[in-house]
Length: 157
Ligand code: ZN
Image (tube, rainbow, N blue to C red):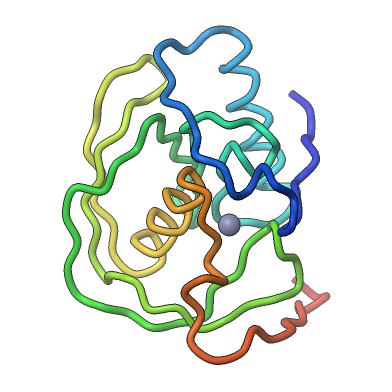
């Protein structure tokens, strides 16, 4: 596995639409493994392939319960609402208030290309919406209510 370079907002790759994955080739498996490693190294809760410069519909998420790999994810239903602080590894040190559904059901394929359904509330629901947006070239900054602010991290953590 290897760390990949995370693209920063302003990089044109972050505004592009990603292509569907038809087969998990060894190259794609390496990409997925690298994305997970890169996400952990950056202390993120999610990472989408375009954030490492690859225009494929792949996201990885870990909200604290282990890594979730979603290939060709689509959100099939949402309900409720949550407003909270949201940040992105492509805009380090910044955050803003974004309203998202509080409950999301999505379908995606795993690394064996078996389709599965995932249900998330709160942070997981937010992460799924945020990462799926990246696959269509969207950043959370498009949806921020109010200002984007600086965040400081506790160095004890
Ligand atoms: Zn992001």
